[in-house]
Image (cartoon, rainbow, N blue to C red):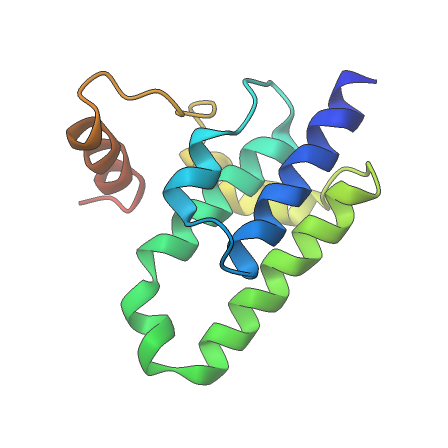
Length: 119
């Protein structure tokens, strides 16, 4: 039951980002602590979304594709379902849980962000 509620909550956070009611940093700071691979995948998909901001600005087709992808993740989680295995597998190398608390505030956020995009 906890995973179901957490999945629905994360779905609402993703929709808040897609509708620009929250920025990515706000949304991921509100993610629940979890071992649910679907929620961890959604977290990393949002971090990736933020990392691609410049590309999204320059490439309309890429932006649409990425928005559709996040919407699919949100719809799946809203239904309480697990994400498909292939999507989870794509993000699994980056999993170290949901890093929503950063020891150095904004500096810690950017350190985690740069680690995620392998810089």
